[in-house]
Length: 516
Image 1 (cartoon, rainbow, N blue to C red):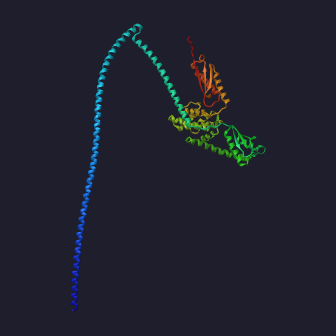
Image 2: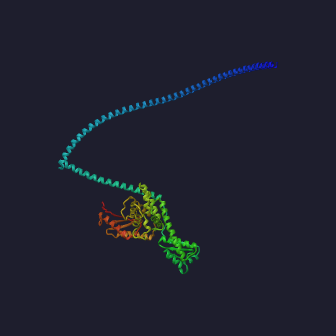
Image 3: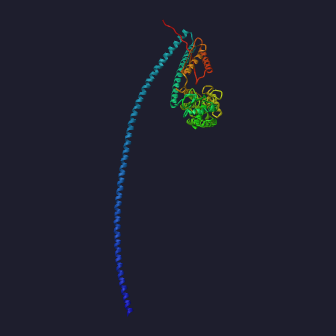
Protein backbone atom coordinates (compact mmCIF):
# COMPACT_ATOMS: atom_id res chain seq x y z
CA UNK A 1 0.00 0.00 0.00
CA UNK A 2 2.74 2.42 0.96
CA UNK A 3 4.72 1.97 -2.18
CA UNK A 4 1.66 2.78 -4.21
CA UNK A 5 1.07 5.91 -2.20
CA UNK A 6 4.68 6.86 -2.63
CA UNK A 7 4.44 6.46 -6.39
CA UNK A 8 1.30 8.52 -6.51
CA UNK A 9 2.88 11.27 -4.40
CA UNK A 10 5.93 11.21 -6.59
CA UNK A 11 3.82 11.49 -9.70
CA UNK A 12 1.89 14.31 -8.10
CA UNK A 13 5.02 16.19 -7.18
CA UNK A 14 6.38 15.58 -10.69
CA UNK A 15 3.20 16.97 -12.25
CA UNK A 16 3.29 19.92 -9.90
CA UNK A 17 6.99 20.49 -10.72
CA UNK A 18 6.27 20.30 -14.43
CA UNK A 19 3.42 22.75 -14.11
CA UNK A 20 5.52 25.11 -12.03
CA UNK A 21 8.45 24.83 -14.52
CA UNK A 22 6.13 25.43 -17.46
CA UNK A 23 4.78 28.47 -15.65
CA UNK A 24 8.22 29.87 -15.04
CA UNK A 25 9.23 29.03 -18.64
CA UNK A 26 6.22 30.94 -19.93
CA UNK A 27 7.08 33.86 -17.71
CA UNK A 28 10.69 33.74 -18.90
CA UNK A 29 9.54 33.62 -22.53
CA UNK A 30 7.29 36.59 -21.98
CA UNK A 31 10.10 38.46 -20.26
CA UNK A 32 12.45 37.61 -23.14
CA UNK A 33 9.86 38.81 -25.64
CA UNK A 34 9.47 42.05 -23.67
CA UNK A 35 13.28 42.48 -23.60
CA UNK A 36 13.48 41.77 -27.33
CA UNK A 37 10.74 44.29 -28.01
CA UNK A 38 12.53 46.81 -25.78
CA UNK A 39 15.81 46.20 -27.60
CA UNK A 40 14.03 46.60 -30.95
CA UNK A 41 12.44 49.83 -29.77
CA UNK A 42 15.77 51.10 -28.49
CA UNK A 43 17.49 50.10 -31.73
CA UNK A 44 14.81 51.92 -33.71
CA UNK A 45 15.21 55.00 -31.56
CA UNK A 46 19.05 54.85 -31.91
CA UNK A 47 18.70 54.35 -35.66
CA UNK A 48 16.42 57.34 -35.88
CA UNK A 49 18.85 59.37 -33.74
CA UNK A 50 21.77 58.32 -35.93
CA UNK A 51 19.74 59.13 -39.01
CA UNK A 52 18.81 62.52 -37.56
CA UNK A 53 22.48 63.27 -36.63
CA UNK A 54 23.64 62.13 -40.06
CA UNK A 55 21.11 64.45 -41.67
CA UNK A 56 22.30 67.31 -39.44
CA UNK A 57 25.97 66.54 -40.16
CA UNK A 58 25.30 66.35 -43.87
CA UNK A 59 23.43 69.66 -43.72
CA UNK A 60 26.32 71.24 -41.79
CA UNK A 61 28.89 69.86 -44.26
CA UNK A 62 26.79 71.12 -47.16
CA UNK A 63 26.56 74.52 -45.47
CA UNK A 64 30.33 74.64 -44.92
CA UNK A 65 30.97 73.57 -48.51
CA UNK A 66 28.54 76.21 -49.72
CA UNK A 67 30.24 78.89 -47.57
CA UNK A 68 33.72 77.81 -48.71
CA UNK A 69 32.60 77.75 -52.31
CA UNK A 70 31.10 81.22 -51.99
CA UNK A 71 34.29 82.50 -50.26
CA UNK A 72 36.51 80.99 -52.96
CA UNK A 73 34.22 82.35 -55.61
CA UNK A 74 34.48 85.82 -54.07
CA UNK A 75 38.29 85.58 -53.95
CA UNK A 76 38.46 84.36 -57.53
CA UNK A 77 36.09 87.11 -58.57
CA UNK A 78 38.25 89.66 -56.72
CA UNK A 79 41.43 88.30 -58.37
CA UNK A 80 39.74 88.42 -61.74
CA UNK A 81 38.68 92.00 -61.09
CA UNK A 82 42.23 92.95 -60.13
CA UNK A 83 43.60 91.22 -63.22
CA UNK A 84 41.03 93.02 -65.28
CA UNK A 85 42.09 96.36 -63.78
CA UNK A 86 45.76 95.55 -64.44
CA UNK A 87 44.97 94.59 -68.02
CA UNK A 88 43.02 97.81 -68.49
CA UNK A 89 45.91 99.78 -66.97
CA UNK A 90 48.40 98.00 -69.22
CA UNK A 91 46.24 98.65 -72.25
CA UNK A 92 46.13 102.33 -71.34
CA UNK A 93 49.94 102.37 -70.89
CA UNK A 94 50.40 100.57 -74.20
CA UNK A 95 48.17 103.09 -75.90
CA UNK A 96 50.18 105.92 -74.36
CA UNK A 97 53.43 104.28 -75.44
CA UNK A 98 52.12 103.75 -78.94
CA UNK A 99 51.15 107.43 -79.07
CA UNK A 100 54.57 108.39 -77.69
CA UNK A 101 56.36 106.17 -80.25
CA UNK A 102 54.26 107.58 -83.07
CA UNK A 103 55.12 111.08 -81.90
CA UNK A 104 58.82 110.15 -81.71
CA UNK A 105 58.67 108.69 -85.20
CA UNK A 106 57.16 111.90 -86.46
CA UNK A 107 59.86 113.92 -84.68
CA UNK A 108 62.56 111.65 -86.10
CA UNK A 109 61.15 111.96 -89.58
CA UNK A 110 61.10 115.73 -89.22
CA UNK A 111 64.67 115.76 -87.84
CA UNK A 112 65.78 113.45 -90.63
CA UNK A 113 64.44 115.92 -93.14
CA UNK A 114 66.20 118.76 -91.30
CA UNK A 115 69.47 116.77 -91.23
CA UNK A 116 69.21 116.07 -94.93
CA UNK A 117 68.73 119.77 -95.54
CA UNK A 118 71.72 120.57 -93.29
CA UNK A 119 73.84 117.94 -95.01
CA UNK A 120 73.04 119.47 -98.34
CA UNK A 121 73.88 122.94 -97.04
CA UNK A 122 77.14 121.63 -95.49
CA UNK A 123 78.12 119.91 -98.68
CA UNK A 124 77.45 123.11 -100.58
CA UNK A 125 79.51 125.15 -98.07
CA UNK A 126 82.26 122.51 -98.07
CA UNK A 127 82.55 122.81 -101.83
CA UNK A 128 82.72 126.58 -101.51
CA UNK A 129 85.43 126.27 -98.78
CA UNK A 130 87.44 123.86 -100.89
CA UNK A 131 87.38 126.35 -103.74
CA UNK A 132 88.41 129.16 -101.39
CA UNK A 133 91.20 127.02 -99.87
CA UNK A 134 92.53 126.15 -103.30
CA UNK A 135 92.56 129.82 -104.24
CA UNK A 136 94.23 130.74 -100.89
CA UNK A 137 96.85 128.02 -101.34
CA UNK A 138 97.72 129.35 -104.76
CA UNK A 139 97.94 132.88 -103.38
CA UNK A 140 100.08 131.72 -100.39
CA UNK A 141 102.43 129.78 -102.64
CA UNK A 142 102.85 132.84 -104.83
CA UNK A 143 103.46 135.11 -101.82
CA UNK A 144 105.69 132.81 -99.71
CA UNK A 145 107.32 130.93 -102.55
CA UNK A 146 106.68 127.68 -100.55
CA UNK A 147 105.33 124.49 -101.97
CA UNK A 148 102.31 122.82 -100.40
CA UNK A 149 104.46 120.12 -98.77
CA UNK A 150 106.84 122.69 -97.31
CA UNK A 151 103.93 124.70 -95.90
CA UNK A 152 102.47 121.54 -94.32
CA UNK A 153 105.83 120.67 -92.78
CA UNK A 154 106.20 124.17 -91.32
CA UNK A 155 102.67 124.07 -89.92
CA UNK A 156 103.22 120.62 -88.38
CA UNK A 157 106.43 121.78 -86.73
CA UNK A 158 104.65 124.74 -85.16
CA UNK A 159 101.79 122.52 -83.99
CA UNK A 160 104.26 119.99 -82.55
CA UNK A 161 106.11 122.71 -80.62
CA UNK A 162 102.82 124.04 -79.23
CA UNK A 163 101.69 120.52 -78.28
CA UNK A 164 104.99 119.78 -76.51
CA UNK A 165 104.72 123.00 -74.53
CA UNK A 166 101.08 122.34 -73.67
CA UNK A 167 101.92 118.73 -72.70
CA UNK A 168 104.75 119.89 -70.42
CA UNK A 169 102.48 122.42 -68.72
CA UNK A 170 99.77 119.78 -68.28
CA UNK A 171 102.27 117.28 -66.83
CA UNK A 172 103.57 119.94 -64.43
CA UNK A 173 100.00 120.72 -63.32
CA UNK A 174 99.25 117.02 -62.81
CA UNK A 175 102.47 116.53 -60.83
CA UNK A 176 101.54 119.46 -58.58
CA UNK A 177 98.03 118.05 -58.07
CA UNK A 178 99.39 114.57 -57.31
CA UNK A 179 102.00 116.00 -54.93
CA UNK A 180 99.43 118.08 -53.08
CA UNK A 181 97.05 115.13 -52.85
CA UNK A 182 99.87 112.82 -51.69
CA UNK A 183 100.99 115.36 -49.05
CA UNK A 184 97.43 115.76 -47.86
CA UNK A 185 96.88 111.98 -47.68
CA UNK A 186 100.21 111.45 -45.90
CA UNK A 187 99.34 114.12 -43.32
CA UNK A 188 95.94 112.51 -42.77
CA UNK A 189 97.49 109.07 -42.24
CA UNK A 190 100.21 110.41 -39.92
CA UNK A 191 97.74 112.48 -37.89
CA UNK A 192 95.50 109.41 -37.59
CA UNK A 193 98.45 107.33 -36.41
CA UNK A 194 99.48 109.96 -33.85
CA UNK A 195 95.92 110.35 -32.55
CA UNK A 196 95.57 106.59 -32.09
CA UNK A 197 98.98 106.21 -30.43
CA UNK A 198 99.87 108.34 -27.42
CA UNK A 199 102.68 107.44 -25.03
CA UNK A 200 104.45 109.02 -22.10
CA UNK A 201 108.04 110.15 -22.29
CA UNK A 202 110.67 110.05 -19.58
CA UNK A 203 113.43 112.53 -19.05
CA UNK A 204 117.00 111.33 -19.04
CA UNK A 205 118.76 111.39 -15.67
CA UNK A 206 122.08 110.13 -14.37
CA UNK A 207 121.24 109.83 -10.66
CA UNK A 208 118.96 107.69 -8.51
CA UNK A 209 117.82 108.48 -4.98
CA UNK A 210 117.39 105.91 -2.18
CA UNK A 211 115.35 106.89 0.87
CA UNK A 212 116.69 105.82 4.31
CA UNK A 213 114.66 105.16 7.47
CA UNK A 214 117.01 107.40 9.48
CA UNK A 215 120.36 109.20 9.28
CA UNK A 216 122.10 106.50 11.37
CA UNK A 217 121.82 104.20 8.33
CA UNK A 218 124.32 106.46 6.49
CA UNK A 219 127.09 105.42 8.90
CA UNK A 220 126.28 101.74 8.42
CA UNK A 221 126.38 102.20 4.64
CA UNK A 222 129.82 103.83 4.91
CA UNK A 223 131.09 101.14 7.32
CA UNK A 224 134.28 101.03 9.36
CA UNK A 225 136.91 103.12 7.59
CA UNK A 226 134.60 103.23 4.53
CA UNK A 227 134.94 99.54 3.68
CA UNK A 228 131.19 99.01 3.04
CA UNK A 229 130.77 101.93 0.65
CA UNK A 230 134.04 101.03 -1.13
CA UNK A 231 132.91 97.43 -1.64
CA UNK A 232 129.50 98.60 -2.89
CA UNK A 233 131.00 101.04 -5.39
CA UNK A 234 133.53 98.50 -6.72
CA UNK A 235 130.90 95.76 -7.19
CA UNK A 236 128.26 98.00 -8.78
CA UNK A 237 130.41 100.52 -10.67
CA UNK A 238 128.25 103.35 -9.30
CA UNK A 239 129.26 106.32 -7.13
CA UNK A 240 127.46 106.57 -3.77
CA UNK A 241 127.03 110.19 -2.69
CA UNK A 242 126.27 110.71 1.01
CA UNK A 243 125.82 114.38 1.91
CA UNK A 244 123.92 116.46 4.46
CA UNK A 245 120.54 115.78 2.89
CA UNK A 246 118.52 114.07 5.62
CA UNK A 247 117.54 110.41 5.15
CA UNK A 248 118.65 110.31 1.48
CA UNK A 249 121.53 108.66 -0.39
CA UNK A 250 122.25 109.50 -4.06
CA UNK A 251 123.58 106.98 -6.61
CA UNK A 252 125.38 108.50 -9.59
CA UNK A 253 126.38 106.76 -12.82
CA UNK A 254 125.98 107.07 -16.57
CA UNK A 255 125.05 103.39 -17.05
CA UNK A 256 121.32 103.18 -16.17
CA UNK A 257 121.40 99.39 -15.79
CA UNK A 258 124.22 99.49 -13.25
CA UNK A 259 122.50 102.34 -11.45
CA UNK A 260 119.24 100.38 -11.28
CA UNK A 261 121.00 97.27 -9.92
CA UNK A 262 122.77 99.45 -7.32
CA UNK A 263 119.47 101.08 -6.29
CA UNK A 264 117.70 97.74 -5.84
CA UNK A 265 120.66 96.25 -3.95
CA UNK A 266 120.96 99.24 -1.59
CA UNK A 267 117.23 99.19 -0.87
CA UNK A 268 117.46 95.48 0.04
CA UNK A 269 120.49 96.11 2.27
CA UNK A 270 118.75 98.99 4.05
CA UNK A 271 115.61 96.90 4.55
CA UNK A 272 117.67 93.96 5.91
CA UNK A 273 119.84 96.14 8.16
CA UNK A 274 122.90 93.87 7.97
CA UNK A 275 125.49 95.72 5.93
CA UNK A 276 129.00 94.30 5.58
CA UNK A 277 131.20 93.37 2.58
CA UNK A 278 130.12 89.71 2.43
CA UNK A 279 126.41 90.61 2.66
CA UNK A 280 126.86 93.38 0.07
CA UNK A 281 128.41 90.93 -2.41
CA UNK A 282 125.67 88.36 -1.76
CA UNK A 283 122.83 90.86 -2.22
CA UNK A 284 124.32 92.36 -5.40
CA UNK A 285 124.68 88.93 -7.01
CA UNK A 286 121.12 88.08 -6.08
CA UNK A 287 119.82 91.40 -7.46
CA UNK A 288 121.72 90.86 -10.73
CA UNK A 289 119.97 87.52 -11.24
CA UNK A 290 116.58 89.03 -10.41
CA UNK A 291 117.32 91.93 -12.73
CA UNK A 292 118.11 89.55 -15.63
CA UNK A 293 114.74 87.88 -15.06
CA UNK A 294 113.01 91.27 -14.95
CA UNK A 295 114.64 92.24 -18.28
CA UNK A 296 113.19 89.13 -19.91
CA UNK A 297 109.79 89.89 -18.37
CA UNK A 298 109.88 93.48 -19.67
CA UNK A 299 110.79 92.25 -23.16
CA UNK A 300 108.01 89.65 -23.13
CA UNK A 301 105.47 92.25 -22.00
CA UNK A 302 106.50 94.61 -24.82
CA UNK A 303 106.18 91.81 -27.40
CA UNK A 304 102.84 90.68 -25.90
CA UNK A 305 101.42 94.22 -25.99
CA UNK A 306 102.16 94.37 -29.73
CA UNK A 307 101.07 90.76 -30.43
CA UNK A 308 104.55 89.83 -31.71
CA UNK A 309 105.58 86.17 -31.41
CA UNK A 310 108.58 83.88 -32.01
CA UNK A 311 111.22 86.38 -30.90
CA UNK A 312 114.57 84.92 -29.88
CA UNK A 313 115.15 84.99 -26.12
CA UNK A 314 118.26 87.18 -26.53
CA UNK A 315 116.26 89.74 -28.49
CA UNK A 316 113.62 89.71 -25.72
CA UNK A 317 116.35 90.35 -23.14
CA UNK A 318 117.76 93.21 -25.24
CA UNK A 319 114.26 94.72 -25.47
CA UNK A 320 114.13 94.66 -21.68
CA UNK A 321 117.45 96.54 -21.57
CA UNK A 322 115.97 99.28 -23.74
CA UNK A 323 113.76 100.24 -20.79
CA UNK A 324 116.91 101.57 -19.10
CA UNK A 325 118.28 103.26 -22.23
CA UNK A 326 117.40 106.88 -23.06
CA UNK A 327 118.13 109.10 -26.05
CA UNK A 328 117.72 112.87 -25.68
CA UNK A 329 115.43 112.19 -22.71
CA UNK A 330 113.24 109.72 -24.64
CA UNK A 331 112.93 106.22 -23.21
CA UNK A 332 114.17 103.78 -25.87
CA UNK A 333 111.64 100.98 -25.12
CA UNK A 334 108.67 103.36 -25.07
CA UNK A 335 109.98 104.94 -28.28
CA UNK A 336 110.30 101.49 -29.93
CA UNK A 337 106.76 100.55 -28.92
CA UNK A 338 105.44 103.86 -30.23
CA UNK A 339 107.24 103.37 -33.56
CA UNK A 340 105.73 99.85 -33.75
CA UNK A 341 102.22 101.21 -33.12
CA UNK A 342 102.66 103.96 -35.72
CA UNK A 343 104.04 101.50 -38.30
CA UNK A 344 101.15 99.13 -37.66
CA UNK A 345 98.61 101.90 -38.27
CA UNK A 346 100.43 103.18 -41.37
CA UNK A 347 100.74 99.69 -42.85
CA UNK A 348 97.02 99.04 -42.29
CA UNK A 349 96.18 102.29 -44.08
CA UNK A 350 98.44 101.25 -46.99
CA UNK A 351 97.09 97.65 -47.16
CA UNK A 352 100.40 96.14 -45.97
CA UNK A 353 101.06 93.47 -43.34
CA UNK A 354 100.80 95.18 -39.90
CA UNK A 355 102.47 92.24 -38.12
CA UNK A 356 105.73 92.63 -40.07
CA UNK A 357 105.53 96.41 -39.66
CA UNK A 358 105.10 96.21 -35.86
CA UNK A 359 107.92 93.67 -35.61
CA UNK A 360 110.26 96.05 -37.46
CA UNK A 361 109.13 99.00 -35.34
CA UNK A 362 109.78 97.17 -32.08
CA UNK A 363 113.24 95.98 -33.16
CA UNK A 364 114.41 99.05 -35.11
CA UNK A 365 116.47 100.46 -32.16
CA UNK A 366 117.52 97.10 -30.66
CA UNK A 367 121.16 98.06 -31.33
CA UNK A 368 120.93 100.80 -28.68
CA UNK A 369 120.85 98.10 -26.00
CA UNK A 370 124.52 97.26 -26.72
CA UNK A 371 125.84 100.22 -28.74
CA UNK A 372 128.03 101.27 -25.78
CA UNK A 373 129.70 97.83 -25.91
CA UNK A 374 130.01 97.27 -29.69
CA UNK A 375 131.52 99.55 -32.33
CA UNK A 376 129.28 100.93 -35.06
CA UNK A 377 126.00 102.80 -35.32
CA UNK A 378 122.98 101.43 -33.51
CA UNK A 379 121.26 100.73 -36.87
CA UNK A 380 124.19 98.57 -38.07
CA UNK A 381 124.45 96.83 -34.69
CA UNK A 382 120.68 96.19 -34.62
CA UNK A 383 120.74 94.71 -38.13
CA UNK A 384 123.59 92.35 -37.18
CA UNK A 385 121.72 91.26 -34.03
CA UNK A 386 118.54 90.62 -36.04
CA UNK A 387 120.54 88.57 -38.58
CA UNK A 388 122.26 86.65 -35.78
CA UNK A 389 119.00 85.69 -34.11
CA UNK A 390 117.14 84.54 -37.23
CA UNK A 391 115.02 87.51 -38.32
CA UNK A 392 113.89 87.79 -41.96
CA UNK A 393 115.83 89.81 -44.54
CA UNK A 394 113.05 92.38 -44.83
CA UNK A 395 113.29 93.06 -41.07
CA UNK A 396 117.10 93.24 -41.15
CA UNK A 397 117.13 95.71 -44.06
CA UNK A 398 114.48 97.93 -42.45
CA UNK A 399 116.50 98.11 -39.19
CA UNK A 400 119.71 98.94 -41.08
CA UNK A 401 118.03 101.52 -43.33
CA UNK A 402 115.85 103.44 -40.86
CA UNK A 403 118.54 106.18 -40.65
CA UNK A 404 119.31 105.94 -44.40
CA UNK A 405 122.71 104.33 -43.77
CA UNK A 406 121.93 101.64 -46.34
CA UNK A 407 119.59 101.55 -49.34
CA UNK A 408 116.01 100.48 -48.37
CA UNK A 409 114.70 97.53 -50.38
CA UNK A 410 111.07 97.53 -49.16
CA UNK A 411 108.28 99.93 -48.28
CA UNK A 412 108.59 98.75 -44.65
CA UNK A 413 112.09 100.30 -44.41
CA UNK A 414 110.67 103.65 -45.53
CA UNK A 415 107.80 103.33 -43.04
CA UNK A 416 110.33 102.61 -40.29
CA UNK A 417 112.23 105.84 -41.08
CA UNK A 418 108.97 107.82 -41.19
CA UNK A 419 107.60 106.37 -37.93
CA UNK A 420 110.96 106.86 -36.18
CA UNK A 421 111.08 110.52 -37.25
CA UNK A 422 107.44 111.08 -36.23
CA UNK A 423 108.00 109.56 -32.77
CA UNK A 424 111.20 111.54 -32.24
CA UNK A 425 109.63 114.81 -33.37
CA UNK A 426 106.52 114.51 -31.19
CA UNK A 427 106.38 117.57 -28.88
CA UNK A 428 107.98 116.73 -25.54
CA UNK A 429 109.60 113.54 -26.79
CA UNK A 430 113.17 114.77 -26.79
CA UNK A 431 114.71 117.43 -24.58
CA UNK A 432 117.79 119.53 -25.04
CA UNK A 433 118.94 122.74 -23.43
CA UNK A 434 118.43 126.08 -25.13
CA UNK A 435 122.18 126.64 -25.28
CA UNK A 436 122.81 123.34 -27.09
CA UNK A 437 119.88 124.02 -29.37
CA UNK A 438 121.21 127.44 -30.42
CA UNK A 439 124.73 126.05 -30.87
CA UNK A 440 123.41 123.34 -33.18
CA UNK A 441 121.50 125.85 -35.31
CA UNK A 442 124.54 128.15 -35.55
CA UNK A 443 126.79 125.21 -36.46
CA UNK A 444 124.43 124.25 -39.29
CA UNK A 445 124.43 127.77 -40.69
CA UNK A 446 128.24 128.06 -40.33
CA UNK A 447 128.76 124.84 -42.28
CA UNK A 448 126.49 126.04 -45.10
CA UNK A 449 128.08 129.51 -45.20
CA UNK A 450 131.58 128.03 -45.44
CA UNK A 451 130.99 127.00 -49.07
CA UNK A 452 131.86 129.35 -51.92
CA UNK A 453 128.88 130.91 -53.69
CA UNK A 454 126.54 130.77 -50.68
CA UNK A 455 124.90 134.13 -50.07
CA UNK A 456 123.11 133.26 -46.81
CA UNK A 457 121.56 130.28 -45.00
CA UNK A 458 118.77 129.71 -42.50
CA UNK A 459 118.32 126.79 -40.07
CA UNK A 460 114.57 126.13 -39.79
CA UNK A 461 112.18 123.44 -38.53
CA UNK A 462 113.98 123.28 -35.15
CA UNK A 463 117.23 122.42 -36.89
CA UNK A 464 115.74 119.63 -39.00
CA UNK A 465 116.12 121.63 -42.22
CA UNK A 466 118.62 124.17 -43.51
CA UNK A 467 117.74 126.42 -46.43
CA UNK A 468 120.72 127.72 -48.42
CA UNK A 469 120.44 130.75 -50.76
CA UNK A 470 123.21 130.83 -53.40
CA UNK A 471 124.48 133.62 -55.66
CA UNK A 472 123.00 132.97 -59.12
CA UNK A 473 125.92 134.57 -60.95
CA UNK A 474 128.46 132.23 -59.30
CA UNK A 475 126.55 128.90 -59.17
CA UNK A 476 124.39 127.57 -61.98
CA UNK A 477 121.51 125.06 -61.81
CA UNK A 478 123.70 122.02 -62.37
CA UNK A 479 126.05 122.98 -59.49
CA UNK A 480 123.38 123.33 -56.78
CA UNK A 481 122.91 119.53 -56.67
CA UNK A 482 126.63 119.04 -55.98
CA UNK A 483 126.55 121.84 -53.38
CA UNK A 484 123.64 120.16 -51.53
CA UNK A 485 125.60 116.88 -51.43
CA UNK A 486 128.76 118.60 -50.19
CA UNK A 487 126.84 120.35 -47.39
CA UNK A 488 125.19 117.03 -46.46
CA UNK A 489 128.55 115.27 -46.32
CA UNK A 490 130.14 117.98 -44.13
CA UNK A 491 127.19 118.01 -41.71
CA UNK A 492 127.42 114.20 -41.32
CA UNK A 493 131.17 114.43 -40.67
CA UNK A 494 131.20 117.33 -38.22
CA UNK A 495 127.90 117.19 -36.29
CA UNK A 496 125.98 114.85 -34.01
CA UNK A 497 122.20 115.20 -34.28
CA UNK A 498 119.03 113.13 -33.81
CA UNK A 499 117.00 111.98 -36.81
CA UNK A 500 117.81 113.61 -40.14
CA UNK A 501 118.43 117.10 -41.54
CA UNK A 502 117.00 118.26 -44.86
CA UNK A 503 119.26 120.47 -47.03
CA UNK A 504 117.44 122.73 -49.51
CA UNK A 505 119.53 124.82 -51.92
CA UNK A 506 117.71 127.72 -53.62
CA UNK A 507 119.01 129.57 -56.69
CA UNK A 508 116.93 132.54 -57.72
CA UNK A 509 117.63 134.84 -60.69
CA UNK A 510 115.66 138.07 -60.74
CA UNK A 511 115.39 140.59 -63.57
CA UNK A 512 114.20 144.08 -62.56
CA UNK A 513 113.31 146.93 -64.89
CA UNK A 514 111.60 150.27 -64.28
CA UNK A 515 109.09 151.71 -66.77
CA UNK A 516 109.21 155.54 -66.98
